[in-house]
Structures are given as structure tokens and as C-alpha cells.
Length: 424
Ligand SMILES: [Zn+2]
Image (tube, rainbow, N blue to C red; front, side, top):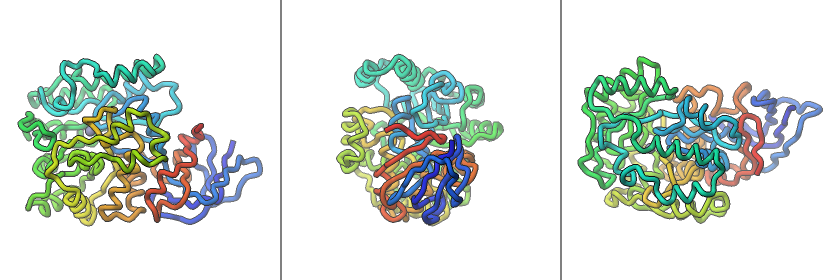
């Protein structure tokens, strides 16, 4: 069966290329700009813009999270710590069709008691909000969520030495991790100062071991100082934007640019850390109509662990990096629906992140590139992120023109995942 999407303006992942017919056959985009074959199923997209499926480059997810993501046109989530390595996907996601695709770092490298321990409720018990969610789920979803929860609660050993770091990386690779995550977090902006951090020597060994396996090494860092440490040991990307702006920032920006590292700012998270709830997003009917009350409550909350920070500094940091040629990727750091991890929701926050990038000074097209082709390229996901012949037919059709007005990305009309039209 061939589907022809006609009369849509096309953003192909790089640029707006005008109104063209896109043909989908099976799971694949087979033509752009060709004739409509006789027996094609026609989708008239008049007044709409067709985008590649969006990619969230920083999540911690579950079956529910992946389902919410897809509802918002996010066809791929990249987990920066969690259970959805190749082994996890085969065990937990087989046969589930209405969810976004996912890649994962597996567990992150951290010392005993290190980040993200401070964010977890005590003793690894299952928090109330999770129990409440579990009651509503199918058995399949329940098992997947419990497995994800177990992963989030320190089943993997913490690292204390070079040897353990190497073993840890090898274990993640054995589980089918798609990249490796390291933690450099001393807690000052998360209201947990004094968190233990592994030595540069141990972390460097982990990065080198990741590279030996041809995996990207990605660092959790929230401050300029931690970012400097991460670049010094050779990471390929930073999973956050430094939230502070010390005098040494121009030097740091140059270091990151010279290293060729990417940065996933997660401005939505930094905004929440500073104390801003995502109220505007939560109140948008295009968002609220798609989310559970728990997620709306979460969007309306915030981390608020670093109220002395400012979005102005964050915007200047991200624009300095952008102008220096650093690849900026759209990510959110969304995880579970709990107000202390507030300001975030699966899928919805990807749209919010693009809005914040535009507020910082990105053009709408640059923000869209950061949520599609750029991320695909940096993560070696060469089958997606663009509307080109041969790519996976992961597509989002929205009303209006987000290449001019970025908030139009939320006006979702249709979503295709691997050529299959999502049932609304
Ligand atoms: Zn994270």
C-alpha cells in the first residue's frame, strides 16, 4: 500500500522545501515531489506542515512515557539512564506498537551515593504516585514499569575504581546500551551539595572504554565547572547546559566547540530548577487534552533547587554555544510524574524546549533542526530525522507553519511511526 501525503509544506529536517507530495510505502518514505500513483491512499494536508518525527535527546522513560511521547509527535526518545537497552527493549517492548522508538544508555556511571540517588525516595520503595499509576495499567505495562523502577533504584553496582568503571561500561555494552552515560554532579544546583563524584582518572577510563566499543560517551553536568571536567576527559556530548555563567564561560564555550562535543541544553529542566513551572504549556489545550492529571500537576510544578539562577544566563549560554558552532540538541530530562521533578512531561516538553530555544534566539528552523536531523546525525540514527527517500516514515503533520511560528508544532493533526498512521 502506498500513502500519498499531498499539499503539505515540507520541513525536511534541514530546511523548508515548499509544498511537495510525500509517498510512503510500508515503513519507508519512497518519494518526495513525485506523482501520486493511481491506487495510493491520499491524505490531503492542505494548510499543514509535514515534519520528520521529533526526537527527545534526554529522557528516562517507561511504556507510558513512550506512549505519551508518540501522542506528541515524538517518534524517538533517547534514554540517558534507564532500562531500555537492546535487552530491555526485547524484554519489555516486544509487540507494543503505539509507542515511540527508544535508545538507552542503560545505567549511568556514578559512585556509591552519587547522583541521581538524591532524587530518589528512600530505600527503593515504590512511591505512591507509581502505585497509583500501576493500578490503571495492563499487566504488560505494569511489568515494564516495575522493571524500569527496579533499574532506577540502584540495582546496578556503583563504581569506585578504574577497574569497576571498565567492568561497568562492558556490562552496559553487553546489555545492548546504545551509548554510555557518566555522572559529574556535586549537587550544588540540586539542593544536595557535597554529592560524591568519581575522580577524573576513573571517569576518563570509562570514556576511553566507551570509545573502544565505538559508543558515544555522554556526561551529566549542570555547572560550568562540571562541563569543563567532562570536556577535559573527552566526552562526545553534554546531556545538559551549565546553569551558571561564571567569568570563565567564554573559555568553556571555546573548549566545547573545539572538542566538537554536542550539548543537549534541556532548558525546560533548567527553567524548572530555577523555579519556573511550565504553566503556559500545561494550560495549552493542545497539551492538556493529551495528558493525565498527574502529568498536568507535574508540568505545573518545578524543581526549584536553584532559585538564584536566571533564564537570561541560560539563554546567553546556549546562544554562545550555538554561535560557536556547537550542535545543540533538543532534550528535556523528563522522567516520572512527580511534582518535585516538575515542569516536564513526555512529548509535551519537546515542544516547550523548542519554544525556549526560539526565546533564546534560535530561528524556528534551527529549533526544528535540533529536534530532528541534528540529533539523528549525532547519534548515528541515519534512518530518521529527515524527510528523504529511504528514511523511516516517522512523520508529524501539524496545522500552520512552525518554520515561522514554533508553537504550531503543538497543532498535531497526524503522526506516522514507521509508516503506520497513529490512531487518534
Ligand atoms: Zn537525566
